[in-house]
Length: 128
Image (cartoon, rainbow, N blue to C red):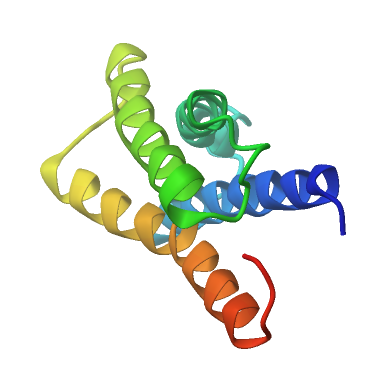
């Protein structure tokens, strides 16, 4: 696998994790995927996807897409902080409990898969 494929795959995993986060959150509040206006999931997920994309740019994630320190931590921080700031700016809720849950979930999924991937690569004698 070349670096372009790894970057595309890592970006897709990150985006998927962010969407799963939003789907689980909406489901836990009985809001449904579409919501009352038909844009429920999109309304919930866009701030975090924008934050994640910004994190990829800041980290230059395409250079080390699977490294949890050089890319994962930065993508997590940008997704989390950027997402919360964009939610706030767009009039969406940022209750303390949501901030805590979001921070933990996003860390587990945006950093966690990279830690697991690196451990597997190291065990196989590959460069993570």
